[in-house]
Length: 113
Length: 115
Image 1 (cartoon, chains in turn red, green):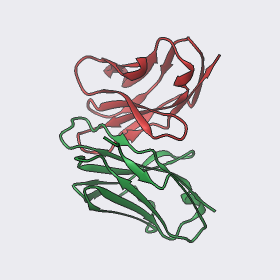
Image 2: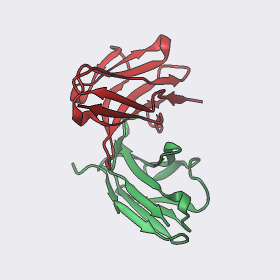
Image 3: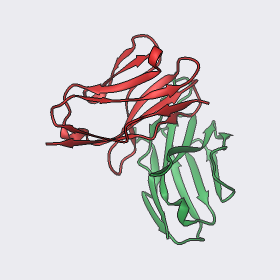
Image 4: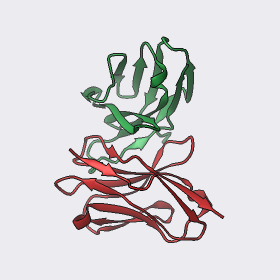
């Protein structure tokens, strides 16, 4: 069965520092991959997605993610974190168009000044 | 576009009462999903519809939960009778067919508290 693992439950980063959130998936073929962000009391907003092609994808708010097939990973990065980036981040996998997504448990990001 | 609309945003009810959560998907979207989010279990898929037809309800926890989609612009998730362990945030999401990869658009959620 497909699964998504986000190894870090909580990460604290200083404002202006770089960020990397880890995501590993389990699936026999190339999945569709997503990163969503959830601010407190809000729904989930799509940051970026990977379907095929270039393995480095750019998203909104200055985020990017890199698909590494050999490592079954899709890590999210940002070169300089802002206080407004504090939120919960979810990695998700879709295995074919039309089916539901499988979400990781999420990583909570705190930003210190 | 107004996005996915959910109501109510907050619901507090007593154990044993019936609870109905409502969702209006984005116009033109053929798929509708109901999720439940808790601290313990994270984000879980409960059920999803395609063209108003339930496709997979294997995530519905038990017979107390039911979901309907009478038309393309409205869906309900009902819990009867409610229990304290049903306390969670319930999200509705939608997506159009033909959008490769399954990207979904989420509503703001309904926070349910059962006392």
